[in-house]
Image (cartoon, rainbow, N blue to C red; front, side):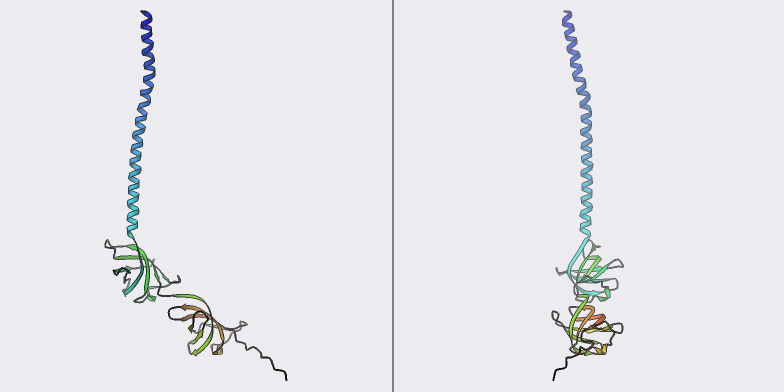
Length: 232
């Protein structure tokens, strides 16, 4: 009988030894699961908030491609988009103005019927008003460069010269234009004659076929080259 009691006691002891650690471990696991669930909720909420912010930011971004200028104001102007809708575009000191070839431009250089690419942000819920950050006037096709040609006709303010790839170009010189011959010596504007081959540095307008703001002209036919005397 005594052995029976001893066996029962041992069985109870073993059962308690096994059960107590399991309960002790089970409680922390439940807490960990709860913490994980809470952290997941926080992460989801953060992602939702971030996505909402991104969507709001995307909705405020404005871009008009090939919009036509309808009218000019003081600090704003109106354009018609390629969808036929009219928009009001505001600008300030931080707005960047560029020509087609990315040269610097400004509001004064813009004209009615010019075609623009406009980037900025919407300032109205109807998405008809824009605060511009970058305005690129693709109608002003001007760039500084070096151009070669042959003088075709003269005028008091310059000449018309024929070029190989750009056809005839009207060159406008000024008092600040530097004239040199092929050796680099200074010459006057009057020394440039019809038929002379010249190099012009200035601002090219591809729409109007003009070269303005000319800084330098080089005449390759000056000084005159000596001609060989035929033998008698």
